[in-house]
Length: 137
Image (cartoon, rainbow, N blue to C red; front, top):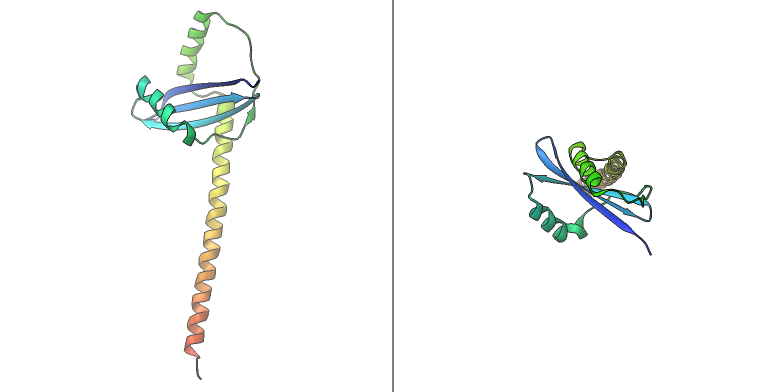
């Protein structure tokens, strides 16, 4: 049976509040970044996740070790407080960077195809005008 774990971290970055959803499945980490704007309340975050989980775009999977050690609850609280102030982990940052690079490549290829199609359309229009000018002479 596969074990799937997830964590959602909300932190302040610049003028906006940002949420990072980290999902570990089969030892592979995927990350999704969401910009909230104003500081979200706990209920708003929960409602957002329930409503929009299917639409979240996760990054490509990155290898992540699975830890199965039990910790003291007080230690877990301390680590959660530290993590809240620290922001996003390095593996998450790598996964987000990979996602940005992929979307950048997709945008470039789509722009290139659009540009070539526009050039072809203009060329055909010029050819048609040329034929119309010389028709019957």
